[in-house]
Figure 1 (tube, one colour):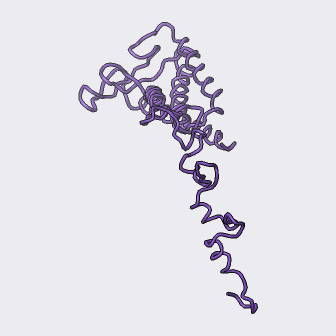
Figure 2 (cartoon, rainbow, N blue to C red; figure 1 turned 180 degrees about the vertical axis):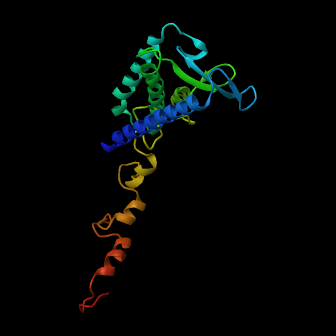
Length: 239
């Protein structure tokens, strides 16, 4: 793994976070300019519409009296993502964490910069789903959470470029095969075939026995035929 790989993933994370943040703040500015607070505009009937509200808490108006807690939580999430960014070796994880960071920063800007004051500002929500009202930052946070769960289920770790190693599920039930278990291959042990008395077999001697001798000390007829093909004739010319 090259040193530039983590930097590329950090860059992807930062770009994703910046795009998410800018998109969130831009859509909120448009909603503030064109929508009337509290009035709903249908887009897909009762399933989806626009309604501008200012949310002091979380989804479903949860925690409206402790706005500062959500400010702290968003800040902690942003710091945690930035602190671990240099150790991310997975591109999908970099994208997911970048979306999470951008969404957290989008709502954090509202907490810090909007009314009624610093740290307790109300988040601008304008996407009405019928059950609750959200914004682009919420979509990024929920989407990134779902993507991280999916990556974990598929075996993709945030600190490695690909999937996590898994045990092979084959017919041998995880036992190594003969080619990789370090044992010699019986099929390859025949390079030096021998007879029961420990001597090389005749077939091996006929092939590699250029120095094989007959019982009386002379070369065997087969070896005479092989060796004499390269012996010069008495008159000095090749046989």
